[in-house]
Image (cartoon, rainbow, N blue to C red):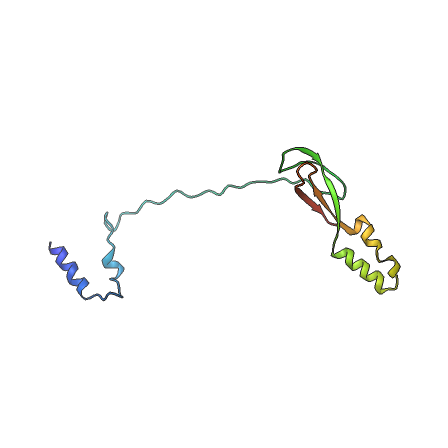
Length: 126
């Protein structure tokens, strides 16, 4: 009871917008030398993914989407390098050959797709 009156007298001086100090509001139930239990350390899980190198030609691989062993379907797409080669050919006066980089597979990126589920598998860029 005496403890309650002491606490009430301390709270009477506190304003509603100002809480009491931490030293008065929190008391360790086991005393000052007791340590509180902690959670066990969390060990990170490391996943290692081994990817097969893609090349400019079709590759045999296991599709991650449908889990079938497939021969990839390759589609060639122009890249920034393709456009720069065409621009250089135009600038040096060889404009009739400006379409040549778009026809050469070595100037385009090779995008690999699964023929079964049409999932994107990877790219090969020269």
